Length: 130
Image (cartoon, rainbow, N blue to C red):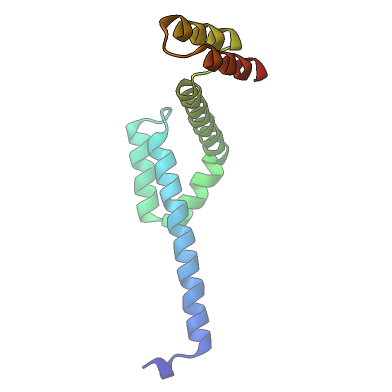
């Protein structure tokens, strides 16, 4: 069975599979963008889905031409929101305190007897160093 297939058949199959994968990536990207839009009504979304089912290639091309700029803006806005959320989380977890706050916390620990004077001096030097 394998001996019957030629290299050109294999190459053609590989090219077809490549373009099918690209088609599905584009299709899922359009469907994801379509349903994440807040400016489109339900009927408009249903019409786009119907158009994508009836004429998939034409539907993809028309959607990208008509909404390409909006897709890029929505993707950039989503990426910016994700970055801000990540930065806020990192700041929260890292517990960014000013050196004055760090020294005051260390002084409170020293006064409570939790740390020694040597440990306090080390924490104070670290806070002032950066």
